[in-house]
Amino acid sequence: MKTLKKIGIGLLAVVVLLALIGLFLPSNVHVEESGEMNASPEVVYEQIADFRNWPAWSPWHEMDTSMSITYEGEPMQVGHGYSWISKELGDGRIVFTKVNPPAELTSEMFFMGDDQPAYANYKLEATEAGTRMTWSIDFDMGANPFGRIFGATFFPMMMKKDFKRGLEKLKAHAESLPAKAAAAVINEVTTEARQYIAVKYEGPPADISAQLGQMYGMLQTYLATEKIAMTGAPFAIWHWWSDTLIRFEACLPIGQKIKGTKTILYGEMPATAAIQVDHYGAYDKTEAVHYQMGDYATQKGLKLGSPLEIYVTDPGQEPDTSKWLTQIVYPILP
Image 1 (cartoon, rainbow, N blue to C red):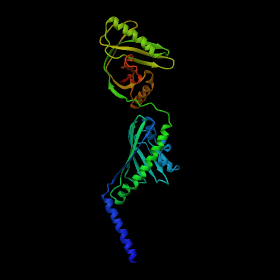
Image 2: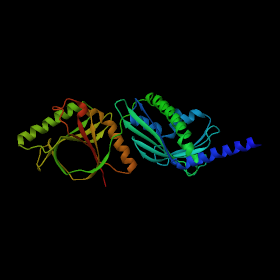
Image 3: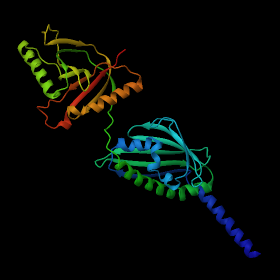
Image 4: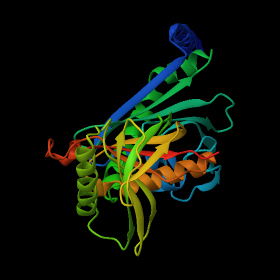
């Protein structure tokens, strides 16, 4: 009997000691792991920002392939999430609270009916190899001293193991997917007023570079003959393009009003609100940017006019096409 009493007192002392230790431990727990993968941030971001892609790489989906999942919200938007019911992992819910494509996402995670969420963050950084992803979670263990001990010991070990496995699977999955064009950085700006001379072209698709070169040659000859100076970079106004017909104007900016000729036309543009992208690369690589700007306008409810491509870099002075700057500008119509 005395032995049992001593054991009970000893166990009580251990419990009291652990409780005292727990009281001095921090309630907030932060765990993170990083990994690098040979895939662009755009590709990796899409695999994270759409929860329907998670079964391909999530470590928790691997632990219970039969879990019941209910999706909610629009993929890649704040409010997108899913709830799960799992005998192996317990029940829970996760939802995005911040999206910043293709660099960062933040989510709230609720475990097994707990009203206090954990906050997960997914940060993507472009590297020479592709993308470095840092996956982290922050959780408040509350005032319970034993919860704090769990948060300081077993919880970080469990999460680090899961994060490492998830990053390994995400790396393999993302590297198996086709490359994705980098998202254009679209800015809303106010353009300056322009005076210009132009030559028009309407007809079937041709060698656009050669066509523009010929048209700019005509414009420069006119300026030289009339002793008129250019006031900026050449540009083109694109009115229509399809597989069978293109219609555009090759333009040179000037600082005065002129009469022009039947071929050399004078034009003016007022200052206006617009969306703009600074694109670096060869001229034939701008098509994807135009589509992205069109999608942006649709999402924002903007009505756009004919786009301008301003050819800032002189190819005769810079042979490296990756350094050619083309400013793509779409006027916003009232």
